[in-house]
Image (cartoon, rainbow, N blue to C red; front, side, top):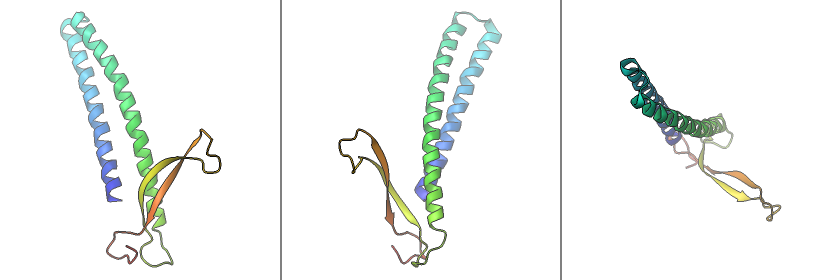
Length: 129
């Protein structure tokens, strides 16, 4: 869980940093326009800002998709730890996700996501390590 939470925090920071960088580029564009109007230097910077906006949007969308996956995984882990009759805390460690062909139809071109979950916990209270 700690690794997922750290990745979540890191991604949020990277998205914020990217947004600040974009605002910096746009501020420079406004400053250029205020100083000299829309001259050739402004036009060149404007073209760069347009490209940077597109790249920033794609970057942000990609990182937000990953954040959504992380938050879903955290929710699954937290819900699975909400009491158990087996002893221990009942937490499960998410190991990874795999893409595999459908077992019922090996010739199928459709791929399915399977979440591989490893039982056990790393907490000090749990006897299911």
